[in-house]
Every structure is written in C-alpha cells, then in structure tokens.
Amino acid sequence: MSKLKQMLDASLWMRTLNEAQRQRVEADLIVRHCPAESFVCRRDEKVEHWIGVIEGLVKMANISADGKPTTFTGISAGGWFGEGSLLKEEPRRYDIVALRQTSIALMPKLTFMWLLDNSISFNRFLLIQLNERLGQFISMVERDRLLDPDARVARSLAAMYNPHLYPGLGAHLPISQEEIGYLAGISRQRANQALKTLENAGLLRIEYGGITVLDADGLREYEE
Image 1: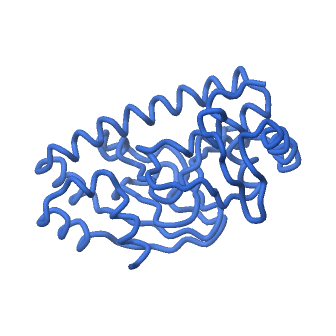
Image 2: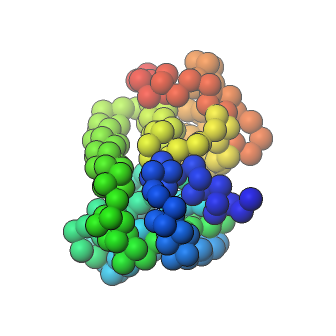
C-alpha cells in the first residue's frame, strides 16, 4: 500500500465520502516531495490547494518585519491545512517549511470547492477542523505568554496528539530535539533539558531518532 493511500485511509474526512467522491479526490490529488528546510508554500502567494502531509514534518511560521522568526505550529503526517485561506480567498498568511524530507498531497481548489458543494460530511469535518485549529492557536498564545520552556515543550508535543488534526499518530514520534526547539521557540539545548525534565516526570521517553509519548494528557496539562 502506498504512503498516499495509507494517509487517505486514515483521514477522517475521506472515510465519509461515497465511492464517486473518493475516486475524484484520488484522481485529482498531486503528490510533491519537499527536501528538508525547503518551502512547501510561501507567505503572500495565491492559494490554489488544500495541503496534506503524507509523511515527514512541516512547520507553520512567519518572519516579522525586524527579522524575528516565529513558529506557530508543527503539522505531522496525516494533517491537512490551508482550508481557511481557501475559504477566505486571500493570499497565504504564513510560510510552511519542511523540517525534514517531506511528501505532501495537493488537492486543487476546484476539487476542494466541489466537495463543499457535494458532501455534507466534508462540511462537518471542516467545521470541526477550524474549531480545533482555533483552540490550538488560543493554547499557543497562552503557552508563549505564560509558560516556562519545559511547559512550552510539553504543550508543543501535546498539540501534535490532536486526533482530529493529526489522526493516526502513534505513540512514537520521530522528531529531533532541534525540531522540538523550533516548535517551542527555544534552542535545541534548552529543548534537550526540557525533554529530560518531562522524561523524569514519566510523560515521555527519549529514544534514538525521536521520543515515545507515554501520557499525552499529562503533557497537555503540564505547567512546571
């Protein structure tokens, strides 16, 4: 089974489509491979696709006028994004950067709008998706303004265990300490310290090539 088919089979919205709708989606999707540190898409460009991550990891980020980088969130395999910009018909408001070699699926805007017109279940999925994303960003504001680096790492990891936004993500998360630092807005060295603190708290286990999350709810509630 191809990685694309595995990702589609795990997508909550895809499971609700009828056979004709599924066939059109599969026929219209475009697969693109993005090297590590390359742009998947750029801020201010015209939005032509809804985007899913087949495998790999990307970050949603921006650079301020004074050159300060800000990472909003990470999007792991199984996640879809960009529906807000498609619905508002505005230029993209952020950069998406591949943190490692990543494969993405591009659903053309025409197909996306066709699903909106023809699938009640797809509309319901998008309502939930937008609400979950809103909650994620409210949590991010709280994290950045109120929490120390250990808690910021905990919340950044917990955000990747949202069953609606990132279905099918297993307990083992293949992510480097540098990538965790990007997502939490701290250095790799500080991320390493935070991971050791969280491991000592029994919330995760540090392993070669990533971490295993032992208690996602505990990470979500961690404060100090």
